[in-house]
Length: 344
Ligand code: KG4
Ligand code: ZN
Image (cartoon, rainbow, N blue to C red; front, side):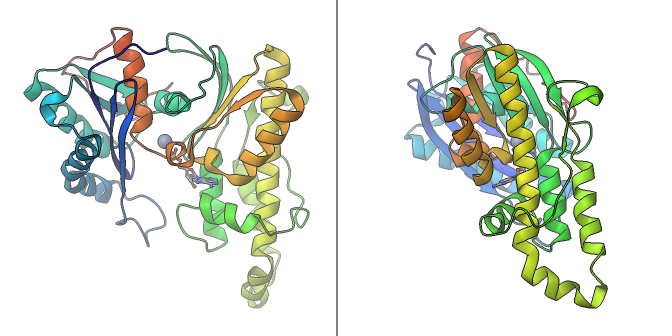
């Protein structure tokens, strides 16, 4: 689908991962992610610490990616970079590095929207979806269902009204004392918990009140988990948590997964589109992957979920998106600025 292009380097620094990847000969030649450790103990990403860590990590990360690909700077034909959405200071580090390289090497700069990168993460490896496909983007900042058409056209079919699904995982993990980011530990503990322990209202709004076929609200479910904890008298809470942490995780995860997968089922039914992608950090969730795979099998959809390393933030997805853009003749001026609130 993609023509042969000269090697392309991609840089991603929108949040707390400093990442670089090389796309060459129509495939991924290298992908390196340096996850920042400086935020541990702060319960979330500290923007100022993130940009300083990007500054420290960007050059070695780019060099490691080139080494892994067996290429030198001079072999590169274009430089791609995430220009939004994300933390302004973090985006600026990647953008400055990319512009410097593009200018120094005399090659084009290709700005990539981080969200479009997540959507195109299903093209990093085969089999690729056919256009148009349904795409559920579930990350720390977004929960969005789109119909993706060729030529970078994204038709929105629904989104969250408040918190993103990943944000709900992070907040629930915090309530349960499971650290940040919260998705992986909640997912792990949900595996051997009792999902019927708490009955939580669905984070999907359906029926008369629904604004779209994928209308979600994740702030209520986090509050419901907090009320469940508050109901336990303070002196008993630690012991209660030791006993029921897995059960709370399983109950929360079941409600989230049910909501997301039921919206996808309805979208397949209403649009007749059978290629379905689930992307973004929360697509790494084992419960979501398993349920989506079962439903796809039962309802005849072709499910596309990126490998775990391309679900969470990475530069491989930025590289493959840039390859599509470059093939379509889309490059960016060196005046490209950071756009922290860029939409899809
Ligand atoms: O896409 P991503 O790496 O960064 C953003 O663009 O936001 O997504 C990060 C989010 C975090 O909220 C994290 O808790 C969540 O993805 N996440 C998961 C899992 N792994 C990461 N959520 C649920 N289950 C997981 N296994
Ligand atoms: Zn992301």
